[in-house]
Amino acid sequence: MISHAHAHAHAHAPTPTPVPAPTAQLTIDTAPLNSFHKRLTLFSSGGPFLDGYILAIIGIALVQIIPQWQMNEWWNGLIGASALIGVFIGGLVFGNITDKIGRKLMYTIDLIAIIVFSVAQFWVNEPWQLFTLRLLIGIAVGADYPIATALVAEFVPANWRARLLGGLNAMWFVGATVAAFVGYWLLSLPDGWRWMLLSSAVPAVLILIARATIPESPHWLVGKGRHEEALVILKKTIGEGATLEGITAHDPNAVKLSTKQAFKMVLTGGYLNRVIFISIFWTCTIVTLFSIYAFGPQILALFHLESGDAANIGYGLINLFFLVGNVAALLVVDKLGRRPVLIWGFVLSGVGLLFLALFPTAPLGLIALAFAFYAIFNGGPSILEWIYPNELFPTKVRATAVGLCTGTSRIGAAIGTFATPLALTHLGLSGTMWIAAGIALIGAGASYFMAPETKGKNLEDAAAL
Image (cartoon, rainbow, N blue to C red; front, side, top):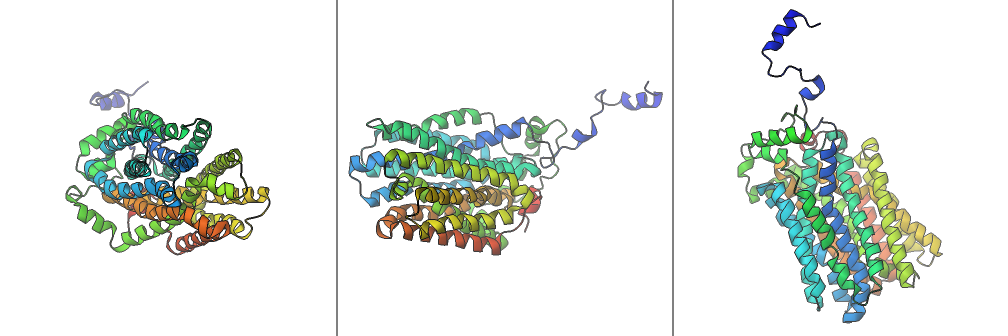
């Protein structure tokens, strides 16, 4: 029975049922995780999936291409590194464009480019043609990194941010694992490598279709003064009670932030320290990782996994261990914090590499165990490549900063990938692994002295200096 006073109070209300308290104040940071967040994360993970796929498939394709084209180690290294050089250019240039024109438009353009260039690889007949196309594919993948990660960082609730951003990185290894098995299956065809290189167009088409449903980032819209649009998108994606509370990115000058100003903001003062820290730890994580990916079958053959089959199956298993390491790190990163997961990840993965350097002729079981040890503990630094850059920079320059960090890390990775066949030829296996262990040690040192702790902070606080 409703009292007369209550009835009178509700007479003027637009809706007869009062809004329940919990939904009255829904913000991006406090909203519960819903199906939209999961869909966004899955579709955004398409970029890392493609990156892993494209980089791993070339390792297997080269097994057929090298004898067919009688290719020397210089071209071998260049083609292995070409996509990485492209990612450097793409991240550097398109991160900033994404901060200017929005996340949504770039999210589509880059995938169309990946599809076109992947298909074109089918008809290459010269090393320079393959190098050029893979460079262009790399540019498109590099463009996708800052876009997709910024979208996820700017949409998901604070207490899920690390797990979902880190999860994007795990998809890199899913892509690489799928590529290892697709490549292994196509190796039996006489011109199987052409189909391998073409195959990356298939997931790209599926991701392009899926992404059509994803709206623009509310953080970005608020930053451009487009509050009404941001609110409409929030109501659709997190609930009717959504507010713009917690999105303090509105800065009247953000609209007029030129490319020069964006880079100046990222490359001076406290933000420069963050760029240096991220670039060092990211480079140290992926130099060894990408070398193992681009030349996995060739490296494993040197460990006396001579038969092609054994080397390729071993390659598939290493992918699996990398994936396990990523998932394990995702489960603990919010409990233990970012710093310990990063520092110990470097120390322990370095131990695996050190064993390979000291005992390159150890029994096969021990070699496999050392590789697995390296791959699993590499998971900590790997997932933080995605978490840290998105947490440590403000919305108006987030994609610029992520693009810059992606780019600088890829310079190191490209040098490492290019140098790996040369190092294997001239320094042998043990010498190459000594270098890899040294790189892990540098990563641990830089992380110990420079890594901030952002556990439990909302996006604005984590990015504040």
